[in-house]
Image 1 (cartoon, helix red, strand yellow):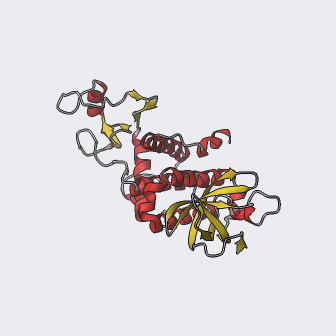
Image 2 (tube, helix red, strand yellow):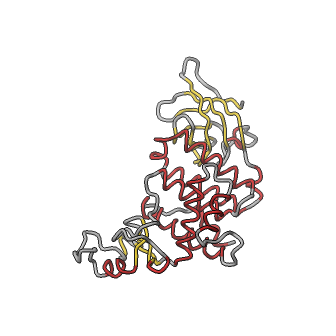
Image 3 (cartoon, one colour):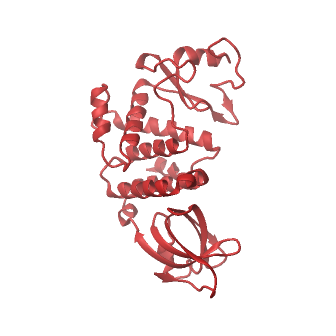
Amino acid sequence: MGRADCQVGVATFTLNAVNIGTFPLGEADRIVVLFSRERGLHRAVAKGARKPGSKMAGKSEPLTINRYLLAQGKSLDIVTQCETLESFPMLRRDLERLTYALYFAELSQVFGQELSEDAANYFEKLSLAIGFMADGEKAPALQCLEFELLVLGMLGLSPELTFCVGCRETAVDRNIAAFNYELGGVVCQNCLKRLRKGENEHGQVPMVAEVQAREGRLVSVFLTPMVWRQLILAKTASQASADLQNLGEAEAFASSSGGFTREDGQAASRLAQALRLMLGYIEYKSGRRMRSLEVLSTL
């Protein structure tokens, strides 16, 4: 393990953690943001990590999994030893996959406090998701969409795709009209018309007028049947496959329900639309703009 100075008699503890972010501290140190199996979201100081030739430099980079020995500090704990368990070198060779993995890390920071309530479970899912993104066996956009839906499910924000969130009528191709960020699900054509008028299913004006701009953020977006089915497919895969690796169950679902698979000629367009929709939903619920994926617009 890499070592840092530590005062004798200071209490220490061990964390197995994914590095999900870093910040400079002083002239040579670095704050590492961790998501650990034992404590969930955690911050610590890696002393000297920014010095030329420091052994801590690579170990403290985002998207590495390390075993840390930390010494308790007054405000921030101090990294005293660090052993790298996985560094995912293949990610650094593919900008698209690296960008999606950094987005996973950003989600983990933004929702870290809530996800820490089930820290061990999320640590495993995050570690697996980064590993599978590095392996390159699945389309990266599809894996990203599935991971978004998995995180939303763990947060209790899983989008409602089966019923209209306005009238609870079963959602089918012919009546899907929009996805409502405020209510967290699909809206049928009849409810969309009512919501545009500021009315609910009883003809009354609700406290929240959907399909309006709120603080510069769009509350509802139009949703095509094909993008809706893409979301159902991805949600099914995220629920059925805890390791996020195999598409077998999802593709079986797609086949049995008249859906589609990655070989469909318009899959890339549907995936892009579904990703934008879920990104908007996540930004609306978090109240924050996600920056990690912006680089993809330049590729």
